[in-house]
Image (cartoon, rainbow, N blue to C red; front, side, top):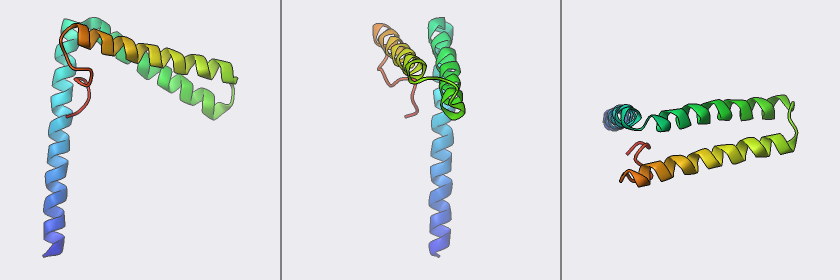
Length: 97
């Protein structure tokens, strides 16, 4: 009985998570069409995140360049938030609900 309840709860949670992810993708795609700079920012953030991780793992970069990458990521996130707010969207609009 307890296992059935747990399985049911886990299935319900998985469905809610999937629904939230699909909803987020729809919102992203719609906003990317309206405001292409948001997609550019997300693409840059992904690239910088990968580059930062590689530099940290390979120890091939000094502390200054890692800090530069982190600062660039912070600036892009701030720009993204400003664009959302300027266009009357909440700052967390591109995060799963």
